[in-house]
Image 1: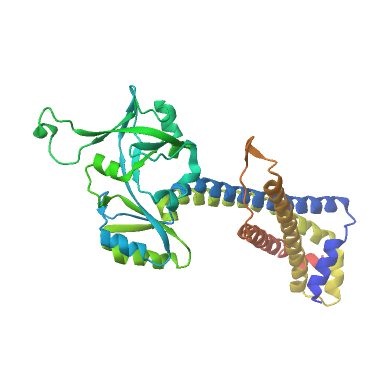
Image 2 (image 1 turned 30 degrees about the vertical axis):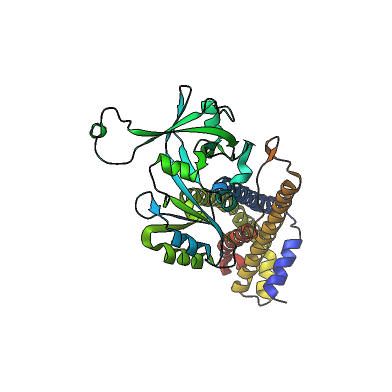
Length: 402
């Protein structure tokens, strides 16, 4: 067996004759365990919050989305539609037309986005699961709105006698006076609310869904003009290959965005928060691991006579340093492993029993990720390596022979 490792393991198991040294060693070990467990629990909680936050936007976001590369709209010809339907890896696709409009009902008003969707939209996205009450409607003038807009306007469901009104500016150039004093500068559309969706506050105040031909007529667009195409993939073909296939059909008129690229700002914000939390807790661990340096130095002084005996028997200064270095590394690694194990048990209990809740019906989201285990253990080992190296370097020939 490696001699420094053998002696380090003996020192790790043995107790000091000085009670104060034993207390310091125990506190040092406890700090490492608590610090590593806390870091793992916090990283798992942020991973759960990230998944939970993205689940809201993923409801409306398809696997791939094509948007106009210039302006807000582009044309999709029947031939291009046929080519898109034959692309390998694409299960289905849907067309949409989106624009901000003015919504009014009984002197109450709101400025949401109206999204014209075709019959495939609900199959391509997960929007079907968000319907809170009502139906998607099967009539031409049916609409589904977010619960935030619904509460703001107070529009009754299936109110055919007194529907809400949608106003959209007329496209074109020049002043309104050029069109005549009696002409209206906007197009008007009456919609009957057939259902209400609920996801989260921002999205609940953003969209009103209506039939695509109806919205095209409102915005004075022809049947080929749309603002986006949503694609659902089956995973059999790499995403980059599907993007290239779509690009070959549509040309440079569109940008192809993955689900992550559709919410780039949200992803960057969540990743930045995760990194900041990791760095803050790592700083706490760095401060805590100063205890390791102190504990090893105390151990060196406590075992000074043993070290002198080993030196007299032929052990080199380098080997003596390695003994205390390995001992410090064993303490930090073992403490980190036990801390991650405790943290794993806490996360597993939350996943199994949901004992910590945000609301009575919503458990605090956590996620067990093997990468977090590796990250925490690697952090502890690296910091343990540095602190053990610093402490073991205190051993000199002068200290041993004193």
